[in-house]
Figure 1 (spheres, rainbow, N blue to C red):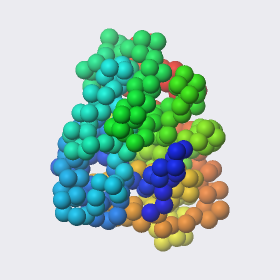
Figure 2 (spheres, rainbow, N blue to C red; figure 1 turned 90 degrees about the vertical axis):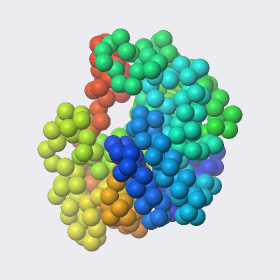
Figure 3 (cartoon, rainbow, N blue to C red; figure 1 turned 90 degrees about the horizontal axis):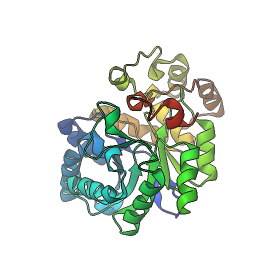
Length: 316
């Protein structure tokens, strides 16, 4: 499996299994299936509320000899209610306990959004904290500290703009190892991807298939699903591949790691096969023309009151 070299030389597998929206029993089987197929990168988060099942799957896979801890890359994420420096390490330790691990390979600040401690999802403006109350710089300093303490090999961010990345870098002198962002042909974010490359930050693409199963949750009405777009279908047919494989191969061809989510063993194996698909220059040019700057996960659930807005969240 191809790996993505991080700034300090650490190698991260480029194709991983996403676990967002995966129900507990489903995610256990998904992780076991993924490891059996060959995946060695599992992407988790505290807010997904399924880390205990993932931990059980990992422990069982280690016990069965399917893989070992050293060969796995496990990512998790700091939830928004634990941005205060005193809450960062306890939040990480909770994830480690649930995942049955001694350390994470990568720990990310999930969103540049702060919530009152103990808030899972905000019900109103009173549940939010402004970034002047809990600065991203102080959260990032605490993230660097847990890395120094050996609880996470690497630390990074998710859903961060170039401006916010430079903000935490300028305050601490240390740049995030990874920025995990929404990326697919409808949202290619070329400028941000290029900026991360210049800053020596690896980029991980989430929702690489356009997140069709999040439409109801987000109150979104999709017109043409990426997996059904004629251009993607045509490229897939020309290679004897599936649309999903084309979308994953496109992400890999851009030099980003990618974490497609599935709980279906057949689809998990199918996605794994995308690593062997090589797209042509003509394919990449055709797919490049699909960019609409259309976010499927647009952060609207944070736009309660005046604390956060599309402008303050995305800096665009």
